[in-house]
Image 1 (spheres, rainbow, N blue to C red):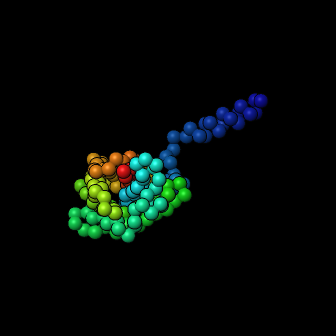
Image 2: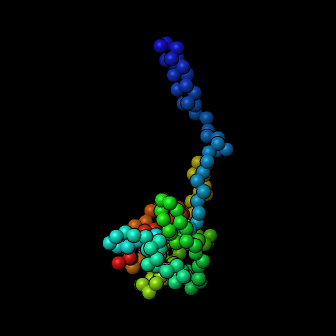
Image 3: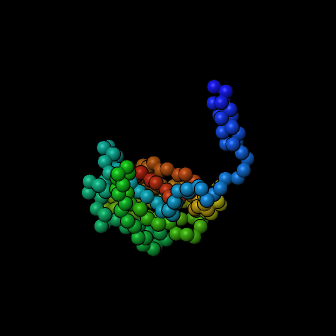
Length: 153
């Protein structure tokens, strides 16, 4: 019993060492400067990209009049999502997403440089996020990527 307590005390003392973290041993999550949109039916919450209600070929995304390339990403957990890049220039951003013959989805946000936090970073910070014309829920961790669930009636 004494030996067990001694070993336990020794490990506690070692773990309370005030030395700095060795960043070479830290695995940072890869961050993408993208916005990810999941289109969901208002009533059923079905994924509208998966069930074909939204035709991928009829989607158009623009920012300041320029066409933005996008891709469709599929994952087991999230299902199909539309993903498009956010330019590296920091400042106010505005995107227009047109799909099928619906009203355009407007996304506005401000980006800035988020300095390195501990071992990880820097990242693209997000602020002043607005999603206009559709009920939505978004997850903002203070940096890109930005995940938005868009509810279509």
